[in-house]
Image (cartoon, rainbow, N blue to C red; front, side, top):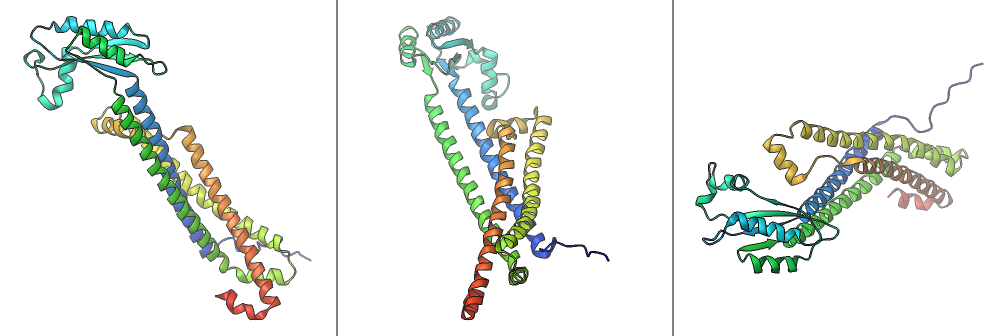
Amino acid sequence: MRVRPTGPIVPSSNIQGNALIVVIAIMAFLACLTLGAVSMVRSTAASWESQISREITIQIKPDDNLDMDKALASARDIALGFVGTKSGQIVDEAATARLLEPWLGAGLDIKELPVPRLVIITIDETHPPDFEAMRSLLKAQIPQATLDDHRTWVDRLVSMAHTTVLIGTGILLLVFTAMVLTVVFATRGALSGNRHIVEVLHFVGAESTFVANEFQKHFLKISLKGSAAGSALAALFFASAGFLQSRTIATPQTDQATALFGTFSVGALGYLGILATMIVIALLTTLTARFTVMRTIYEIDLIRSDPGRSEGAQN
């Protein structure tokens, strides 16, 4: 006498299940892609803000009665005399010509044009110097000097970064909302095809928690497959983009993209966020399946107690 092998209560593979795997994979990919993009924008904006706030610039306009080299050295010494400054660098004529090369062309002779010269001062970000006192002292000793502490640009950059992060977060919330609705409807659609299984199990005496656990396990496998596939594709996308960027780091196109968007790398926190997104999607699908099964059993009980409700339940 042989015991007939048992099979799963819920079919392991059907059209609804396969469609749900594809839907979950697509939504997981979009959610992880948006999460990685927001993470990149935040890190890039923080890098921009840090780079700008670490330096101030002293600009000296040329004058007939001004010894430019002496004025540059004097301006650097004045700035370094304040507490909160670290180092000073005079931008020489060759470097100034390279800065103007995109607009005025190569082979430019700085001495023939009234081009201002620059002194770059590195400051302590945590304890910056007194900019107003430095500006007043520079103006008193070198009237042609102008101090630019980049506060205006930093404030604008911070506002732009916060706005960009808020927009990205809003898009992420929209993607998650669409994902929630899509998973809910797809899960209910897949369960509607298996309603007869729920009814049979319930009629033969199976407890509602047993039926719900069986469907919960089934949809947990489906959601893990879909969310893992979508999350893996998103992680592969960011890893491939970072690898290609590192291989072409010396090209002008890559340099411009890096200056604008930063490195296409989400870092360890980004990959942890992708993993967390995968887990959230799997849990969401599993809980949706459980609640839907419990509601289906509740509707079956209502119909059995009052057959007149069958028409309303079906609608």
